[in-house]
Image (cartoon, one colour):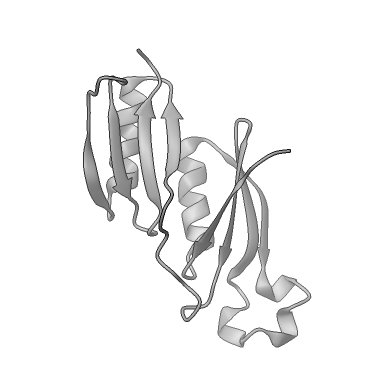
Length: 135
């Protein structure tokens, strides 16, 4: 068994996945639009270039994503993307990039369990916890 994460976006899935790919050194292994799917004919013309399914691979983790129409979109609740980063400098770089255009709930700082930990919501509405794995 394996648990993966599936994120919903308000029409900016491709933009978000390109950003995450570049920021995290990940790979996009699938990016399928509504227009290239069997649902093409039942999809409004202006929505056909939006993403029906995408996969992003980071080491041995996989994140999936989709665009949902505005009337279906909901603010994420009850979870965070927890990202363990190898060293403090990289933790700071990732935190700052994800925070740009988003909102910080808990500034990056030393805690009793980590040299650097912070919590934020990125510009795409996705909640993140960034933790430095270096002790």
